[in-house]
Image 1 (cartoon, rainbow, N blue to C red):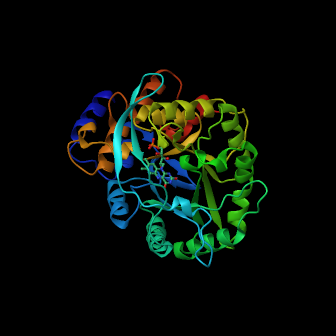
Image 2: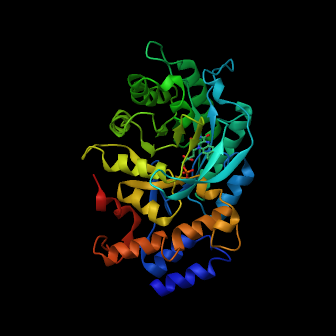
Image 3: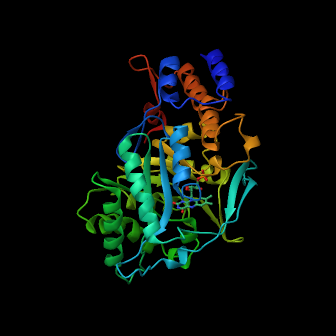
Length: 380
Ligand SMILES: Cc1cc2nc3c(=O)[nH]c(=O)nc-3n(C[C@H](O)[C@H](O)[C@H](O)COP(=O)(O)O)c2cc1C
C-alpha cells in the first residue's frame, strides 16, 4: 500500500481526479466518509468561512476540485429596517498577508494577517449567494452553507429578536425547502472586543443563541456554533463547550487574538491550544458533532483532531498558501491542498491511517479502515 501511495502521490501531482474518495476506497480499502451538520460527506475536508468563499466562481472551483463543503463568508445580521447591532463588523478591507509564524513552542507554520471582518456588501447580494448555495447543496455535489454574526447583548440587555427573526427568515427562504444549514460565528475580533470581557456574558450567548435562531423561524434549522478562542484559560474554553451543547454541531475553534498587534492569528499555537482543550474536556460530555478548525495544514494534524472526536474539518490558511508550498504542480489551490492532505506519503491522512493500523490502534471493519472510527482512539 505504501508503494501505491507513493505512485498516487506522484501521478496526482498533475491532476487530482474528482472521484478521489472512490479511488481511495477501491485502492486502500479506506472509507473517508465524514459528517458535517447531519450530512454524510464523501471525505472530511471543507473550507471555513472567510475571504475564499465570497462568490460563485470560488464555489465553482471548489465544487470542481471535489471539496466536501464550503462555509460562505459571515454576513452581519439585520432587522427588517436594515439596522445591524453588529454593524462594526461589516467593514471593507481587501489586503491580506499570508505569512510564516513561529509558535511559542518554536514550530514554524503559516498565518493570514488581515484587518477586515464580515461581509461588506448588501444583504441582498448575500441572499443571491445563499440561493446558489442551496441549489448546490441539493445537487449533492458539495454542501455550501451560510454563516451569520447576530446581535450579542450585554448581560443586562435582551437579545434583539427582530434581527434574529428577519435574518434567519430571509436566509431560509433564499435557501429553499430543505432544513437550513447554518453557522453562527463567534469571531476572534469579538474575542478581542470589550463585549467579550465577561465570562458570564459569553456563556449566556452560547446557551441562548441557538434558541434565538431556531425560535425566529418556522423553517427547520441545523445549526453549528463556531466558537471563538476567548481570552481566558483552557478551563473556561471547556466551559464554553458545555454551554454550547444545544447546537447541532460545534466548530472548534476560531483563531487566536493577539492583544498587542490587534490581529487574529493561527499556526501551531492555534492547533496546540485547540487540541489541548479538546483533549481536556470532561469525559462523557454530550456535544453536537465536532468540526475541526485551526491550522489543519497536513493530514497528520487532521488525524489528531479526528482522534479527539472531530467528524470533519474546515480550513482557511492551508487553502491560501503560495503555490510553491504545495507538492502538486498543477490544478487549483483547492486541488493541490486536497492532494497534499490526503496523499502525502508521510504527512497525509492515508499514510497516517495506515500507520495507525500497523500500530494496532485502528482496526478494519468489514475489510475497511474508516475515518469516522478514528474518534474511538482518543474518544472522550
Ligand atoms: C482572512 C480570514 C478571514 C476570515 N473570515 C471569517 C469569517 O468571516 N467568518 C468565520 O467564521 N471565520 C472566518 N475566518 C476564520 C477561518 O474560517 C478559520 O476558522 C480560521 O482561519 C482557522 O483555520 P485556519 O488555521 O485553517 O486558517 C477567517 C480567516 C481568515 C484567515
